[in-house]
Image (tube, rainbow, N blue to C red; front, side):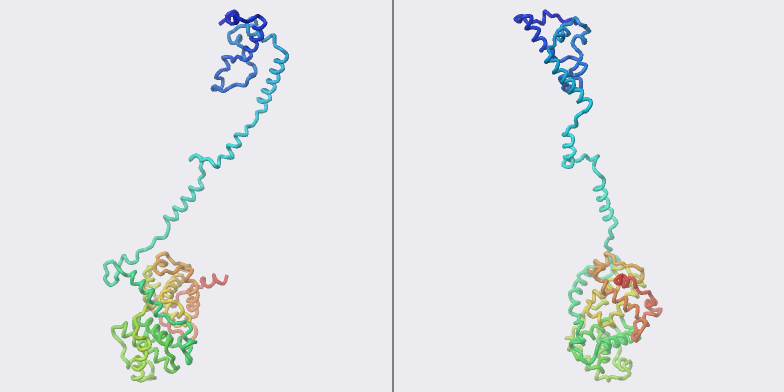
Length: 413
């Protein structure tokens, strides 16, 4: 398309004025080829290799635009050259924008897209979830006895909660041998208990009878001073009272006289029975370690081996005066825990046992170490009545089980 000069001239301007204004118009004109070059982006004012309007229309040197560019002033030429140099430097060495660094610095405060999130939080979540899945569940130990009226499943938990509150009334001071007794000591007590365990085994009495017998002896000695020659009489009468409370068939007084080699008469036995009931205020029904031991063995889902070994260990504790300071429930829990460690060869205390005993493994360790020491020397010394009792087929040779020595070795390291 040809552009007519006459149609573009203003009617009220002279020729010289027209040339000067024409230069400014041509210099400021946006060429059609530069529009929307980069998606509508604004171009630099001086673009290199800029096409003129005449080139776009196919015209040569005769076009008006080329004629207008020829009379270029020195000042304009210098400005164009300067702008070209700036543009070439910008192309060869592009200037880094500080805005990009600002965006990178602020990225940590901006929400991260889901596709770019790291997997570590998700990994931690999965670990917590897997721990919850494999967490040891609590076992309902009474579900198998739901139809057994003697198990009293409906209120068995309340019953043992009451035992826990009342067991303190059946305990004695661990220093009563020093404060109350002047003619006997703890070694004499150990000899008496070891002998009574043999008598209990000969008469084939219940476990409950033995534990109640020891409890009555300690409670009586904690309140009444006894001469040395009367100590065996106290043991015989305590067993007689326990048999009357627990047993169906009670040994007669003559049997007690016979096993004591006639050291005491019938009248002495009956007089001591009256005195003991008076000192104890006829309070015989107290929770003993046996009551808790049966419950804790059920929580441990025990078998015959664990049952026999637990009873073997707790009867060793009955002989030792140092174990008087422990509550019956605590002593029963420590015996079950030590028996499990002995049979399995490693520490084992399930959440079900911890739930029903209310004792953690750390709480039981001190008492368990003492029980292991008693287990190690059970077959040695003068007091071997418990060992010989449980070294028979009736009790599954529980005394031959290896002690859990690793519990003591950990404290020495």
